[in-house]
Structure formats: C-alpha cells, structure tokens
Length: 207
Image (cartoon, rainbow, N blue to C red; front, side, top):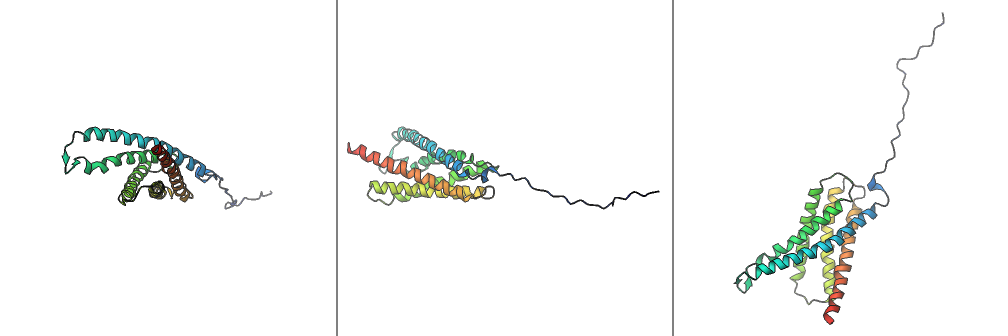
C-alpha cells in the first residue's frame, strides 16, 4: 500500500501586492494651466461685476443723499459711506472665490473657504486703499499705477495665503496655487486697471 505524499497543513505561499499606479488629477504636470485659467476667468468676471455693483450703489446713494440734511457741512450719510462701498468688494471677491474653488478637485469646505477669502480680501482691500488715499500725495500716472499694484498685490497675497492654508493638506504642491493666484491677479490688475485705465484716462483728459 503506497502512501501519497501529505501536503503540509501550514504551507504558506508568499503573495505580492503591487499597488496600482494612479495619478490624481492635482498631480498631473499641467495642473497649473487649469489653476491659471480659472484665476484669469475669475479676474475678468470680477472686472465686470465690481464696476456694475459700484455704479448701482453710487446711483442709489446719490438719490438717497440728495434728500438727506446737511450736518456740519456734510450729508448725514457720509460717515457710513465706507461701510456701503465695501459691499461690492465683498460680493465680487465672494463670486471670484467660488469660481476658484472649481479648480480644486477635492472635497473640502468650499463655502467656508470662499467666505473666509471674501472677508480677508475685503479687509485687505479696504485697509490698503484707505492707507493710500490718506497719504495726500499729488496724483500722477506713475503714482496711480503703483497704487493699483499695491492694492492688487496685497489683496491677492492675503487671499491666496488663506486659500493655501485651506488646501495644503489636500493638494500636492499647494504653494503653487498661492503663487499662481498672487501673480495672475497682481499682473492683470496692474496692467488693465493700472496702466491700461490710467493711460486711457490721461488721454481722455487731454482731449
């Protein structure tokens, strides 16, 4: 009677697991193109929304201000004028931040991210604008361009820093988002609202 060889009960076969090489969307080498594109889109949409809101508020304030009595040589609405004029800034930055969040393909607190961006951006915009306006220096084309540069530079830097903090644990190389956001908004703002508008106004005043 031949005995068949017994298979050991504790026989183990080594197994190997090779993880699938999946690259997330934010790790793709051209992700900065999407980030640059969404920031440029947000800038141009903001360039339409902000003047439209400002004009609407100026006309509404003007129609209200005509009926207000003079107090110490000024209309009663003047002390609250800064509070009213920051509304277009907040709404514009809020809409721009919502558009920017579309470029982040991850689940995160988008509403909290956009609200914080709009709040800090508005405070930065109003603060640097107030600082520039209270210097009482002679207005020149170069001075106007530098003022626009500082306004866009400081505001975009503050917003991009806050946005970077919100996505730094989700996105690889999140510092690139802060860099692209700051450079795109500062460059476009200085060229279009600074140099472009400044030269146009100067030529308009000459005629």
